[in-house]
Image (cartoon, helix red, strand yellow):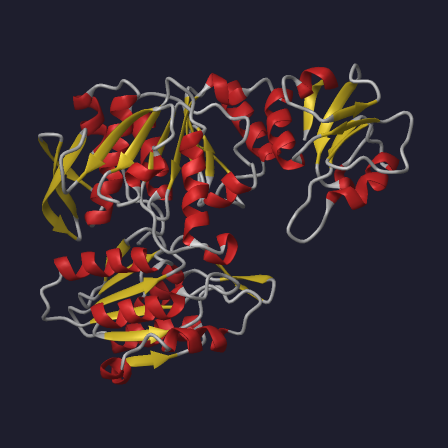
Length: 494
């Protein structure tokens, strides 16, 4: 990352606790880099230990390319006298803190709100961004689907970007006059120190269910990763917690933030009741006021309530918030539906965890008349937590009339092997109602062909994604586009 002006290494280090410094801190730095191939003259290079490679192996390459300073956990035996070496306990943590210092701590100049939990993160931050734009603010968005500076989209490759890119994005928001930023905070981001050094005004907890155990190994480690976000919230910030999730209050046991709660089922600081749930939207009694919202399902009642609660905690007017919130659009890939000319309802949703799939199917069942068939197309991602595969198949079978098991993003795994894992969750009584079609396009086409007027099709797992990742290659693929092609729908539909 190259800044517009040179920065002093001493100021970039700031108050960061260091183990050892060899060389001069009073030198100018032109850019921060953690990829030795991007180093230029005057760069500060971070040697970070990753899952697949160790940046310490490339210190010599970085120095040869023009780096004038190196942050590392181990000082190399062969040192260059012209280079400043800063030894730290954790290079990833140091990179995040120093990136913030390098750009003048942009997060401290924003009302930065982080949202964490297994499900709902993308919807909540996107709704909050829409809401604050409608309230007249310039606001930023950092999400799985896209990043935004006000209404200008910026490409997104991770739920939470690398801290150098993240601070650059936050800095751009400040320069463009943004006052607020709403950001997804993934458990990976917490563990990998991507949010270290940021100043949060508030944090929201959605829920905690079975996910990412391929990375965290145990549910307890996954919980602790989420909890550490709240542990680090500063005094004067808020922590808004879903009281209906059994892990909600665990999250805030050690927080310095002011704790507030939201709930659909019990007494809480912010409450709502579902009055009507239809494909057209939700009628909720939100904090004592009946309002119609364009999002669908009880899980979205939680998402809307958390966004409302956050807006209240940020000091907004209740009436203005409810009016603006009622006009917010559904989020791309989250329970998007279309009704065809034959009165077939097709739904595309990102649900890729057991809990998310259960919520979407339960919502459909609560709306349907039961006189129609519900056909579910579902797969599971490769190179990810395999334990959830049979669970998702079982849920799909329990709540659908017909299930088609197919590919999601198989990544480096064979899709047939993933489907084999899912098949283990299909109980005997459901075997006749389950098809296995490896090719996702053919699976969706088959579901559409099987549907009769009045039936409902759910295509789950990929939502907003416009690719399918197979053996390291991302091929263009869009669930919505396949459905549009089959039914002859216009591009703007869905």
